Image (cartoon, rainbow, N blue to C red; front, side, top):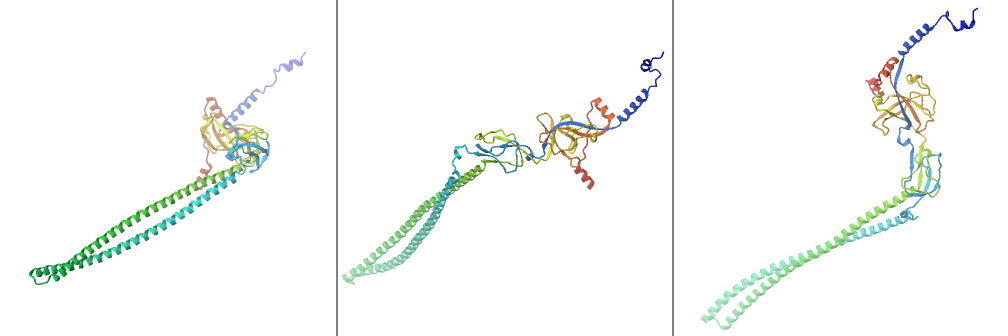
Amino acid sequence: MKLQSFDKIYQIHKKSRVKRWFLFIFIGGIITLFLPWTQNIKVKGNVSSLYQEQRPQQLNSPIPGRIIKWNVKNGDYVKKGDTLLQLSEIKDDYLDPLLVQRTQEQVNAKKGVRDYYEAKVGTAKSQLEALNSSRDLKLNQLKIKISQLNNKLTGEEAELEAIQNELKLSEDQFTRQKKMYDEGLVSLTQFQQRSISYQNAMAKKTSSENKIAQTRQEIVNVGIEQNSVIQEYSEKLSKTEGERFQSMGQIEGSDGDIAKLENQVANYKARQGLYFIIASQDGQIVQLNKAGIGEILKDGENIGTIVPTVVDHAVEIYIKPVDLPLVKEGQRVMCTFDGFPAIVFSGWPNSSYGTFAGKVIAVESNISLNGLFKALVIEDKNEKQWPPKIKMGTGVQGIAILNDVPIWYELWRNINGFPPDYYEVKNEKAGKDEKAK
């Protein structure tokens, strides 16, 4: 009796297809080994911005103060120039509500003092001109007097010469008259008359010599007076010039004080504008760390963060030092963003789903604190657009695309622990130059 269970368990006479399947799988495996495989480097990073002004920025208090009014809360979107909060002054030096006005009054007072000294300088200049004119007039008078005395001296010297001639003649006549008187040829009266004439001539000579000596003394005295006038006016001029220079120094000092006070006025006005903290750009307010009214802020203290709404996103990826020589500027990188579904075939990037293409624009030469090198990746405008919903700081998984090689080569490389092949990136600019040539 033939049992059905025996036929189902022991299939001795059944035809097997194992060989066919083995050959099929073997041939398929051989074919698979020659399929192309894209070498790659897997990296991690986060979303950032290419420009510093588009990155999240702290809101800092430019001056110490007390919060008196909030105009925003966490999550609010603001426009550039919107007032975020208002501060009041806490420093004693700036509590006066009329501080700017009073400082401006000090500036005006200093300007008045400067104008006074400028007028004093003008007066001193007029005094100098008057003293110079008076000195010149006095010296001219003395010069004329000396000239007159010299003329007088010349006349007196000529007169003395005439008197000397007359005396010589009178002396000769007296000598002859005396000889004749001794011989008895003339009377005593005649001899006495001639003697008197001779004595008168000698008296005239003495008188003339005295006049000449007096005139010469007058010339010396006028010369002394001239020197005295020069000395006197030099002292007056020096004193007036010193007062003028002193006034000019006061003017310069007043200008310095005015500049300092005007600087204070400008600083006070600018400080009043700092009581209102405004948004530096369009963005969202987050991470406000001060609450309530009346809290005190220190100079430069962090209040919160503003995240720009318009951002040219970029990706910061971190590369191991061993892989750094394989990454070049212009290299293609496939990115997957946290929160966006993706199916990734690392060896066939074109077959992946949910990946977005980018290209390396810079590789930093300095190692980061995490022991990796940072590179910047931007969106490739020629391929699928990056998702507009990505946010700053979003995590990113990156695949740096290298050479296309057969699968068998990639298996052989991994089995032997060899690194990926060096990837030569063709620079677009260089390509354009070659094409132009």
